[in-house]
Length: 289
Ligand code: G1P
Image (cartoon, rainbow, N blue to C red; front, side, top):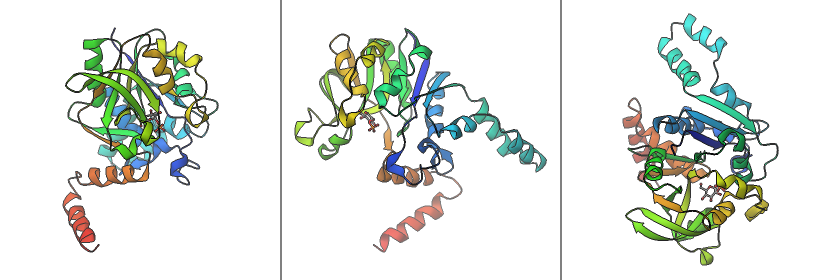
């Protein structure tokens, strides 16, 4: 069955980015001049999905405003003759058909995904986590959709991480069945290094069977006392095929400061008007270390 809907959980409090996230959603923190959530929306659209649900919470209104029209701003840009910027701002509002639902309390990723149940209904759907921004030739979500179209079942994106980093992620136990493809046997959320079944971490792109909703509804709080999507996937794997796909591309975990800095620097090095000067600046600065 074709995947028509995508869900972005964006209700988290952004504790790792305080104080920046005290009065603004972490999803609105920009990489250069574009909020991180816009990169995610663009990936969804580039992958051919148009129906998008963002799970928000209190204090997240800026996300809705960002994807809405801004008559005052448009009037101002028009009267100043700034046509090019005006067009870009309109495009953001026209981008997609975005729906919103609020998660009333932060009870974890699994609980946030469960809030998408009535929007999704009984069909497979995509979940994209805003902390994972991916640069790739074929959009990461499109790679996942292609695997899903071929294999059916549920498919989650995997990335090999250094052993010492496994405790930051969901980690899988699985058998490689093709190049880049694993049949998942089990998963564990944020295991201690010595208990991790592999160094294959779950990256924030999932194509899920709607059965996950029934399983999430009976999942009790796990790691961090939160309802974990990983724990529901663990049950799903006992009932239905679950694949892991080592996506092609570069992932930036912008939910931590090092990943965020890497994304900012690498994206800046692609900006035509500043890249040369910026590269020279970086070389000089690093040379002095
Ligand atoms: C979430 C998931 C985890 C996954 C990670 C990917 O964790 O629970 O399984 O590996 O996203 O970024 P979070 O980063 O929200 O703590």
